[in-house]
Image 1 (tube, rainbow, N blue to C red):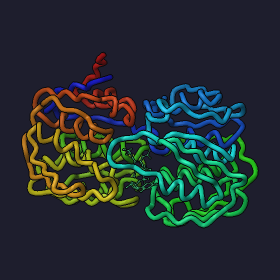
Image 2: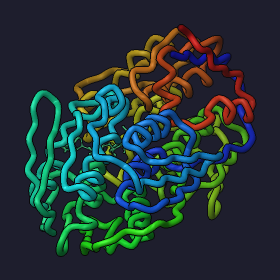
Image 3: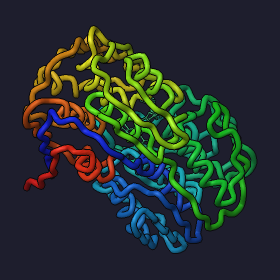
Image 4: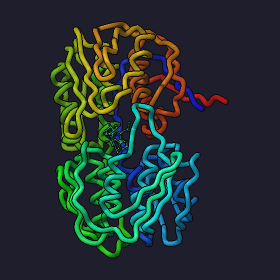
Length: 419
Ligand code: EPZ
């Protein structure tokens, strides 16, 4: 277990280079089992979620070689075994093995996945899609057994534009007989990145990034080289930090379009930004104006950035509101922010109000999930005095080299291992 210790209240400046997208990489790695030749994926972030997937791949018999940000996966000799629950429980994205192994072996057994406790996180849309493709789904005591004589293309409409279901059904459909249409599909950049990877392997996918994705089944997928797209949630997290206490912070290796909704909100708050082709330079303004956030599927305001944004809103003048429309339990970070001197109120499980500006003081707080942890890192850097963040392992799941990246811009921050 780890905790993070921060001496806050310092102005930060310098450069931060963004890593590959966690939410893309955690889909690309399981997707590699679709191909019985070696695939190479670059710009993979070195985060614990990838380590967990590496462990599962190795358990299945894949050969995994990692050097720096490159991962080479040879699944030619994998067996279709039940991944132990203690492995698949480590993260939500283990469920991508469902679509990938079903596609390859026409049968898969998997336990219900893990993931941050931000809501019930059902997988009914994934299972509805597998059934539409001709699979039989049995569930007993959290164990899913999914089998198909044959996978046949189908029209699948998603009740909700679910990222996970969109990606999982692409994986299941790439080698199905005939054509699959996924309507009301998720449009997030990582959905597009996974579709590009599959096409690089020889799949026939079109429409990724729109709400209708077409997949024409192919017989064989071959080895390829692919690059993970920059992480727009990491990008947004550091943009938010820079807007609070940054002086000339330049965030590089980004795709500005992917954070358009955040740029618009920071602009509303009076944050001066210089936006380049693949970088953004931010100075914290003397005064931040309040704003109202409503989380929506891409390209709306990302739910994964509403928690980091809460730390910034404590410094904005006036009453700001957050309307969380995606997850039903994503305000636990507000309890911790209030311990530090914020005035944040959870009105319902989807509505919160933050009145600012309030002076934040360093305290002992705890991360309850990944992005809640990111919120507390930002709050700790803003606050005067020492902040200790317990359960920091959540943060290490999604932010590569966060201690080094923040130290490089002047933060006094360290990671401590505890028993
Ligand atoms: C992905 O989760 C991300 N995780 C989440 O990021 C992110 O918050 C979420 O997409 C939304 O953008 C990964 O990519 C690993 P969903 P996922 O399926 O796929 C409901 C982070 O911080 N739903 O789009 O699980 C669900 O309950 C993490 O990096 C069903 O009802 O999200 C939720 O209300 C946290 N049935 C909504 O859809 C289903 O079968 C969005 O879920 C699937 C989802």
